[in-house]
Image (cartoon, rainbow, N blue to C red; front, side, top):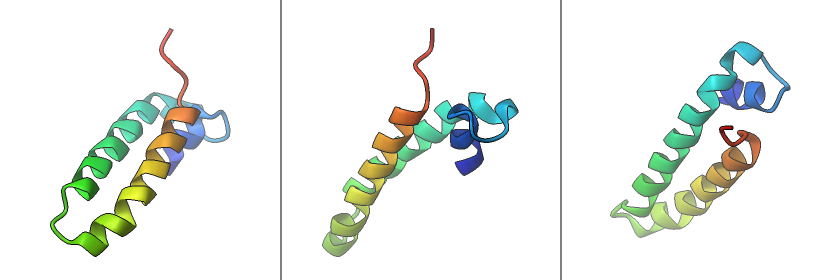
Length: 65
């Protein structure tokens, strides 16, 4: 995931830049899973972490042309 996002940002291997959207999708699924967790402490910890990861991924990966 990290290599694909750094590739999309132009800092890592360019051959993995296409996978940036996959990593962005996975962070979205992680956010949904964190919000759906039954444990309140788990939701309180992981939902903000996953939201920041999602926002970072969306800021890094360029929009399709």
